[in-house]
Image (cartoon, rainbow, N blue to C red; front, side, top):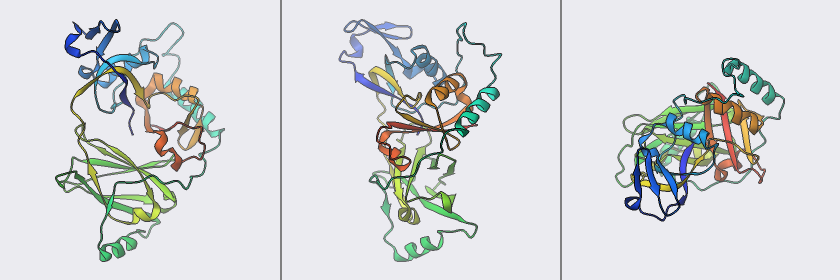
Length: 298
């Protein structure tokens, strides 16, 4: 899933009681500025996060992921020399470091509950088994994405089959159907799929599947995001790793400090898939790991 903003501690003061400022509000209750992030693009939000060094601050947000598609206008301190340090050099250094660290560990046998509904048709099940392999060593994962409560096709949704080495993707058609082809050897006992609807109206989902579940045609139901503003102590989830994070770069483990430094300078050069604790058991048995960053150089 993409990095996102969340409210760690909701503010007890009503917005109507706060004083207006050009860039937000001022709260008398806690004597702090409350930045209105709902009017900013992702690049501007990212710059504010960097200025606060990843620490929590007060803000007004809409519930949505960060797009991470824009290059932030970073103000470098006198210790940084961006013209002398190219991304190519940093990427090469990261790749070398990652190659010297072990590749990702084996999966566990813990499976999270999914919300998929399988087709009851015996004929469909037989057909699905036939579609297990395409003849070239690949497997077809197929299903449908609908809107919960209406059973109508949802917005165009991208389905990601996530592995540390590579992420395989496919999109739904106008009727909500998708077919995702992945190498047979990439399918493990448990597997992680992400469903990312276009726009912010519907919530995306991470789902864990057993291998046998992927042989069925499944239906995922999208739920609407709450279109209301939230405000309080804001933090960014999935932007920066820490000592309890596991970071992969192209399938190899990478030191989190090195990743944070490079990502802060060149974040538009990376494709990042952030995996919260509830789903990391697909990739590691280490209970001390709190989250996972699967990253690739674009």
